[in-house]
Amino acid sequence: MSLGIVFLCLCGLVGGRKAAATCSGIVDGFVYLGSGVPSIGVGYLVTHYSWQWWPIFLMPFALIGGLVAWRIWHELPAATRRYIDDVERKLVPGWRVLETADR
Image 1 (spheres, rainbow, N blue to C red):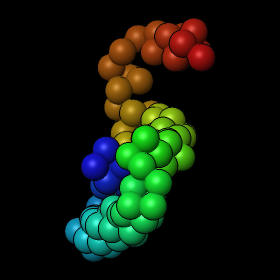
Image 2: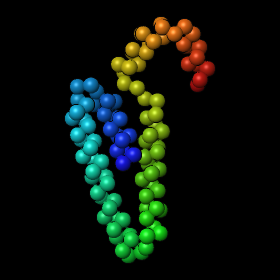
Image 3: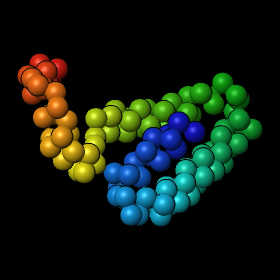
Image 4: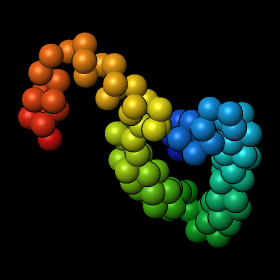
């Protein structure tokens, strides 16, 4: 579920403003596929071994989702970056000083 939310947030970055609905539909389909395929593995795992392996099975997926979220945490669409550069930096004096101090 949380990985699906992260990927839906990517729609604006990947698809842009005009293709956001198409991108959202494609990503939504992959979210369902990504939740359905591992269920086969979990079913096999719990019937042939035990439920104690279920959390261990989920750990790689949680790690991948966390890495993807960490990677895109500060990404912005190009239009938003232009808006910040053109408008917001002019409205807030000393913005560049604050920005370089944070990094």
